[in-house]
Length: 401
Image (cartoon, rainbow, N blue to C red):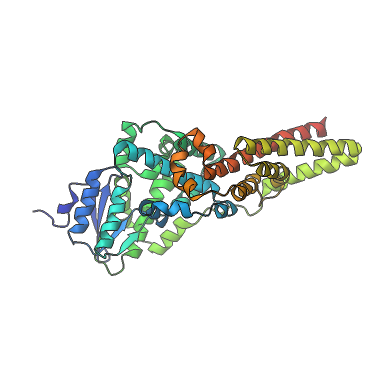
């Protein structure tokens, strides 16, 4: 005998969990499948559900339903609040999705967008149950070592510049997996820490959000990627802790030491070297050490800014800031030069609208003012970092020579 609750699911993978008087129908979808879009449309159209939950957070929903949202972004605020790397990560995800859409003729996440639109059209409550993508990225990054974070950043950067077609094997994995996991490429499967944050934690998080957000609904349709179906079903059935407790645990960031030990050590070494140079070697040795530090950090920071196509004023700021900012935990030369670049060459509406296309070509990064600010931030910071090691080693050689 057919179950009327599942007849409209088009044979898509699904699970049904009853808990606390609520029946959850978990519909596992492929993020690049028209069949999944049809299944979502027909399931909601059946009138069998009181509420709809989707594997989205507010930011991703806005990206799917409001194409102009990017043009309203305050880039200067992004730089000031230290979210530049996060912005670049979101941009890499958008670029990966764009490549999939062009190759397959369907927008990645179209079934999630359809679920929201269909539910709103029928005036059903819509619950966004996924964790904010920036928080997931931060938790994943915090669990990786320096080399792991470098590989993660390199993978995201490759996603920005890649223009070749997505391989068949990768597409098949995506049909049974998760968009965030796929966007990280092979590194996700090779890194247990990344898998834990990107997949396993989100299974627990979405189960908790389902339990605490259903309201008065007794029949809830949850539209999630097929890769989450098994884990989400397990946690929805077996988790005994209060959902708010689980959610708060998975929204927190690992506690880091509030003492910037590396900055303290670097400041003590550099400033101590200057004092030792003036005290033991007089004005000539002290001035030489100071000049070498300024030139090593300032010149390399300025070169990084210049390579990024920075305005002359941005290059000057990079040169002045690079010798100072490594000694201060709250300052970064890339941030200061990037802020200057965004102020002098304010990005236009057209720059934001063309950003996702421009970052997929090398020339586009220098042509687009938003992308050029990002380049300014990263290359100035890189130049300063190289200068710190170069200047520090030269100073050490002088001190022990």
